[in-house]
Image (cartoon, rainbow, N blue to C red; front, side, top):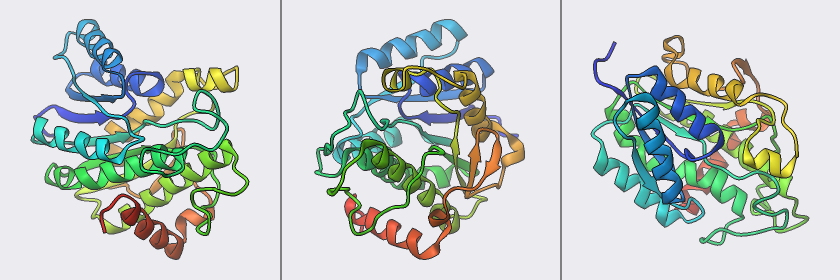
Length: 276
């Protein structure tokens, strides 16, 4: 076992699953937390609350709006400046298929369909930018919070300019997350960095779910435990490229495992985020 604290960056850490996961990891001890959010006041309240409740050093905070790729790059640079190692990246931040982010088609600062940009491209770019740090901290992990809600990527209309539907956009962004997880697992040795994605729980009582759906099904704790397992469980050392439904290994849509589709998405993603 390593003697240093496990350093974990959680995006979307000021609400819902991200905040609850941060609190749980703090309660476990032995973790140095890096928290991302887009509202500094919420970040400060979350970091102060974790420090006071668990008697741990105050987590470092990083503010960025993931709807703008330049801010994602700045976030990665700030993380690299702030820590010499990164054991786990949890790409949790995202928006749902409806309110409060709208059911109509909206675009990011860079002109991309908003859900594809925030739920997928931001995490893709952040992962790419932090890969050298993750690899230098081997064995490291990347955990992508995805969903059972999935839809094949329409490569002739990735930005969904025709027949837009918010839930369809959400499901396509989640399939892209899972596909990218599998692709990176093929490209990076598992001894250096593992890549896994999961559906943490169904309709947890988060602000996003309650505002759009009006009720919950699974508890927040169900999602926390499923995600925490991918962060800390030693039984998953070396396990990479998998998709989990809560704590059970599952299969995503077939397209996520199609090498040609994955390669097309990977190449497109590099182009869209300016990393060709």
